[in-house]
Image (tube, rainbow, N blue to C red; front, side):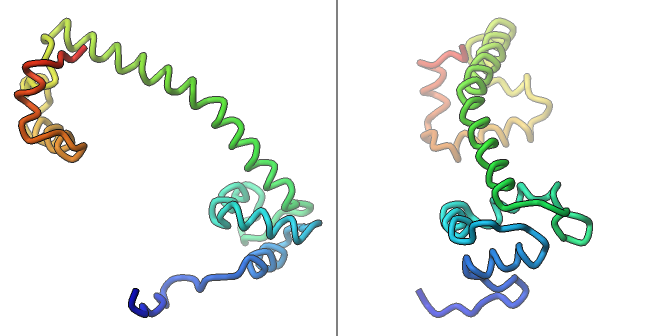
Length: 152
């Protein structure tokens, strides 16, 4: 890659140690500096900093007594919660899509998704077709779908 100059309008990059120093300068308590650096090596600083938003004052200083460990525990809780919810979300999503497909098929027929009259306007229908194209559907997807794939 060519030597591309840094963008001066962006913040300069900081080492893991400098990232910890910045948080400490804002009042964060870091009991185990090496463990904190190890965590930052696995979890991006900006990803972790999202969990600090409610733990700071308006002047970007941490509220009294906030620790790095507490922030990491919030991150771990969120990660575990997402792990528990994802399979449930998939079930809800599939059920939702099934109900929509069933409704469309019963009310408008087995290729309802190809009927532009059920869209709000022609532009919305064209956008839908473009989205299908961007998803990798072949150019002749419409004839293939009309022959073989009902909406349900």
